[in-house]
Image 1 (tube, rainbow, N blue to C red):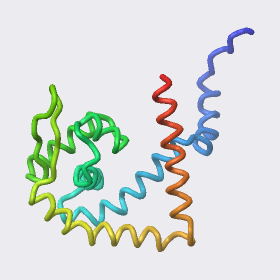
Image 2: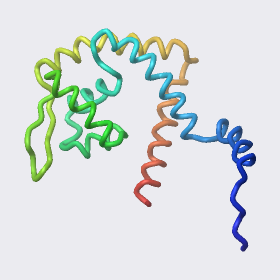
Image 3: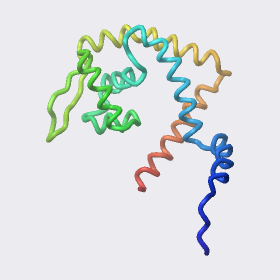
Length: 160
């Protein structure tokens, strides 16, 4: 079978329309960015970004014993996690303790628990506002679909 010739610049531009409407990554990023803005608006007065709130939630529930596990649980790159951890550690909301080897285990401090308690009404306001904009049952369907997409992506990442 003969190799396909490379796309011309014009062909690439024409393909953008299809990508814009069909690409799962493009749709997910656009949606995630908009949803994050809703939550960010509610959390900003508390000095928290949605990504930092997410880190606090995962650490508070004891679901990760290292930065690598934490990044995996959050579905983010280590560099993004490192920036968020630095801010949370500096603010005294998290504390890191040495673990096995080079691992550092993170825990929520008393100040971090107080910040979570303060942030819960803001999170609830964002959550309620989002759900109020959706038809009944759509939030559950969206969460299920997102879980399926995450699982598919994890399988592809493991296969690489």
